[in-house]
Image (cartoon, rainbow, N blue to C red; front, side, top):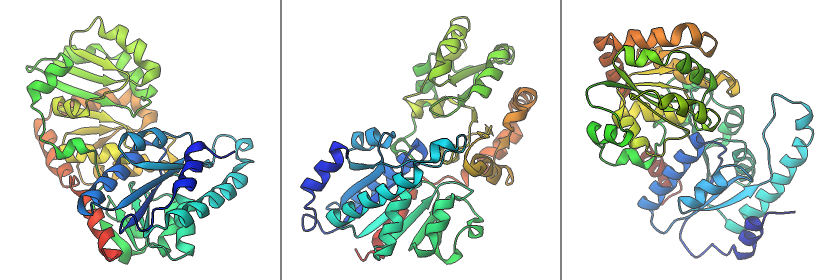
Length: 382
């Protein structure tokens, strides 16, 4: 049975002629795919106000909520990615993939896009692949330093491939690569709030250096456990802590916060602009989105890559900066022994911290969305 949004889309899809240009943005699954996609969509609207944009995502994934919240239409495919932990769960994968191609064929016929942009996530593959078979121009955003298999397969027939890391010619045709950086959330196009206002938001003081810990939207258990076991490290070293825990660890961290005046904890941080403005140091996973954001704000960072990420791309993301002295990295399996020592070393070495800030700033680009939009519009003769 098809979802209601998909049925309504097909019933009301009389787009051609309503505007001069139609673009599909396909992909999602995580904020690291969705937020850049929305940023590109907004940049396209800014540069071509009459454009009609349709998102295509995966039914049941977070893009089905986040994209409408951003003011754009989305259609969900019944598709799933390969499950690395359970072979049994992959039995229905061929059926779901075939069904998604059937859905995509109808979407392309109804919407008649002038271009398709893939931002990553398994819902992007059938859309771009089918578009390429009927000669619709396709564009790829590869957020990570290690390219996903789907994007590598799609690259040969893509018009342009936008990347955020150097050395991506080992995955893609060099003549199609454009080094743009990753589009970041709209908070980065606004004036940075003051450190004082940011610290006031979290109930913290100006007199102490502040460590921001972000483990992704679900939190990071390994990081959380190390912080719990070493919570007195912060007060003993005149440090404050902004600790985004994820939902599962929020209760545990909240009980610790009650006993510590120098700590703020929360399952999620809704005001990331304040969190980044308050931070003097950052400890973080190394998904593409957060790497791009930290590069834009230029803060000294210790990355702890998520060890189970596809193709270990988080380690590749972090290594791209570590090799250029723009970040430090602690492997997840060594976190108990090395994380707090690495943090202490960084806090006690202002020269190192300053060098890291200058080096990581070279990777930050607030205008990646505008550059990508401009290149896409140029290639579809607008």
